Picture 1 (cartoon, rainbow, N blue to C red):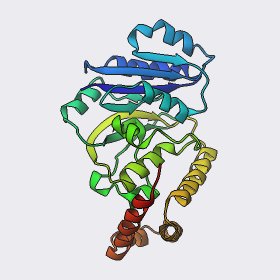
Picture 2 (cartoon, rainbow, N blue to C red):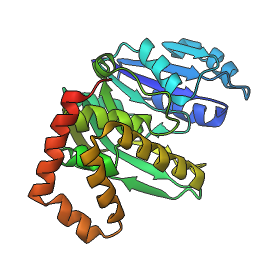
Picture 3 (cartoon, rainbow, N blue to C red):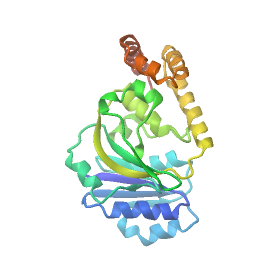
Picture 4 (cartoon, rainbow, N blue to C red):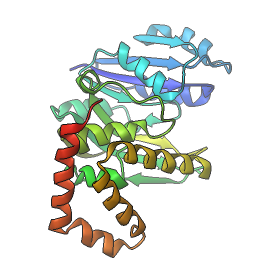
Length: 268
């Protein structure tokens, strides 16, 4: 089974080296490594040229943002599964890909845990939700993380690539569409996949993310379900109330009903 790893880079030479080295030391033999560079001016292009013999494909050119670059990588990928590991993120050890392959995956999306690295170097393991808990409801409020997710490449042929009109949340939107709406199969493996560098994530980034998620939910959710979402969002800080709602059969029936309505009327 071939695994495609796609790295997006722009003016992050040190992050690129860290990511690059973590891929190179993998003990799994059938890895396709693709790097899409956004016309970096900090030595990234020179580094890629010097190491071009270790890459299956690389290009350095201007793009329209990270999701445009990720779509370029998808277009060049030929593996059964695709992992997005962008500059500054790195695999936890040299056995990550072989462990994944040994699980004999067949699901549309297979995901593990991510280790978040804060500005001060402190690490925290972000354990993902169990696959049975990943639903439209879960994705309305939460997400999975793409540096710890393996996507079947055919998903992008089926649903298209990432939306480029969103700056931050298109990966979350892809989960919402594929898992939440279309019920694509998903599997959680309790293993640490990658380190995620939290450096540079500011309050302004969080604000943009929240605004974009709100815009996407308003665009894609049926109006009745969006109204219910607004009510739940107001109660979000009260975890007891939220958990009670999540376990309420009537509410879950409503979510499932509108999920079916949404799916039948949804168009990419």
